[in-house]
Amino acid sequence: MRILYLCLGLVSLLFCAACGNSSSGVPGFIPKGNFSKASLNGQYVYQIEGFDFTANLNGVAYREAGVFTADGNGNITSATDDFSEGNTFLTTSSTGSYNISNDGTGSLSFNNARGTIHLAVTLVSSSKVYLVEGDQALNGGGLAERQDLTAIASAPSGTFVFREHDLNSTQSVASIGAFTVAGGIVSNGNEDVNRGGTFSSLTFTGSFNGPDSSTGRGTGTFTDSSPATSSFVYYIVDANNVRFMAETVGVDGLGRAELQSGTPGLSGSYAFGSKGDTGFLSGVNMAGRFNASGGNITMGVRDSVQDGNVASNVSFTGTYTQAASGRALVSLTTVANQNLVVWMVSPTRGLFLVNDPNTVQDGSLDLQQVSSFSNSTMNGQFGFVMDGFDAGGAKDRVGTLQWDGSGGLILNEFTNAAGVINVPVILSGHYAVSGNGRTGASIGSLSNNLIFYLVSGNDAYIVQADSGVALNGTISKQH
Image 1 (cartoon, one colour):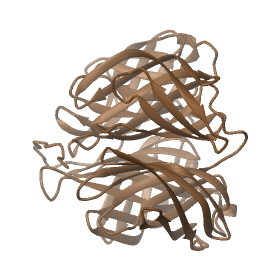
Image 2 (image 1 turned 180 degrees about the vertical axis):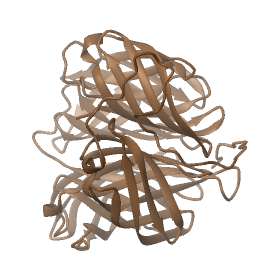
Image 3 (image 1 turned 180 degrees about the horizontal axis):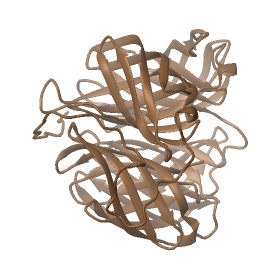
């Protein structure tokens, strides 16, 4: 696999977390919120995916996940961190510290055997935290979720829909499917796999060893019908959500599983977002929306950037077939990325992968909760996270977006640009919401082509539709 070559000019830096009380050149900018150190209180599961440029300028993919405990007073009292890069898998324990400003932006650090890990964070709520790596020559982004301590005493139980994206020395692999687990034993496992552009459908069995009673961290294995066995670490968020990290030597990967509920059919209006690899890591980013009803896909539109080439506001239709298991096969009229395999978690949410020989791509879709959108739909302050690449190299950003309900937008962002940390930057812009939820935004000195696909007035998928850029992410309204 070719990895995107980056010409980096790394310089010494001072880690500085994004914060709401930074000076601003935007008239009338006021950081909003009632967040503080007390807002980050409890035990959190986190996942980070990124690139390490310390060994060579080509960059090496790394994955990181774990569990940390925040005391509400600025202290990380304990943290278990799993780190995977190439053939290395390390588990370390640590303590640390954090700081949170009134608008939910701030910093978090772990001090472990690998050194000090710095993260810039933005709280959506006390239960959901966006984060990016804030260390020299390391770029990564991710999410932390507050753990339900009543759910971590035993292994997960029920039927789960899952999605995972792995990298090994030769190719990328995306997998999606469903399995049932009871008493730690996995049955009825079915998965669809895109392995370096080659699609297959497999069955599998497996096991979940009991989790650690204090962290909800456990281990397990899956054995598929190819046959191949993979090892993983899992982290229980709550009874409905489990997060995964590949533990197999030479495989770097993260995944998620969500408890299936209701009648898992594809029906309604959905917004979606996805990312994946082509010849380049993170070489494709996509977001869009469509209507699904009675086997037909209508009113579809999407924006994507693949290997630096933009496809903007592309209309599509299509067809789909639905199984009782929640698995739907979708065929679209677009030239690229036209075949999707969707596994529905519930009638309102699904996970999917793209069956395309030129990409290894996966994502999620959510039922749109507004029948017709307008500028007034977006009103208030949102947390956001984006990661990927731009012309200067790896790029990660986290912070807040203020929407005024009438087309005005203010961004307060922390960025890690190819390992160089930038202090918070306040930028203004404007936006326009279409009735179907597609929203175009322009923010000075950042992009004229930020595209949001709204799930509701609270959540959206983002893709930066600029040539030569591979950046996407999500936003959520703070509360």
